Length: 323
Image (cartoon, rainbow, N blue to C red; front, top):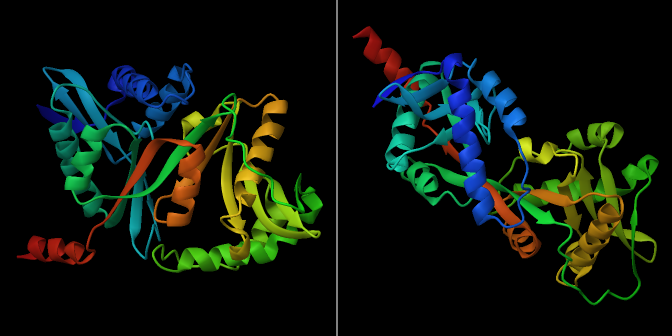
């Protein structure tokens, strides 16, 4: 096995590997869109193969795997530089994929650390247990997932709560959910999630957001909302037949009363009537409330793994170079 920096001469082979991985996930995730993503993957991989952080594995001159990263970015899940390998940013073939994935990460991480990158995230298919195990054994943990729902599969029926009305919020009234947005930020900052709150960004979001907001009301008071956007976090969500949930929050006293489930059912029916065939959600797996709720109605097709390397290693490498 030979490991080299990615080379544009191997883009076609890389696209073929990426398509095989997508087709494999389609056999495991029944609700995933059966679509030809060759053009999307071609553009993605051509771009990634220009990255300074990309390694490919060759066996007898043929591409058997690759791992590429975007970055670096400052302040990536902490006060350190980070890099991210998106869905399609890696693909591995052969009979020893676990080992190849580990070796690709070893080679790629050497280059990342040289540039002071200590926060590393990698998105892979949810049912690729062999690759998942490889990254877990390399010190990664799951941080979030993408899930999907075929809108031709009806949402399970629920008893509609009394006096609860569901509707889409007019774009000029998005500030009506400002307090719920603040409560969401507070919730995400607490155990076991521990996401640093950024209350200041809420007003920017309210002024500039292009998403659609669907709300549940009781006595004309908004008690919860679900936000739906045109795109999500990966190339699959760019499909014109798909929309993506990108935020949700319900007041504590209205949870476990089927309010969220019925609002989701309302959204699915509205989108289906508009000709939309699929709905996705980007779920932080660190958030147990979200994980349990979305898991009832959506099927996971990706997991994003994250590893934070002790940044003191950078100083140690500099010391080694000096002695």
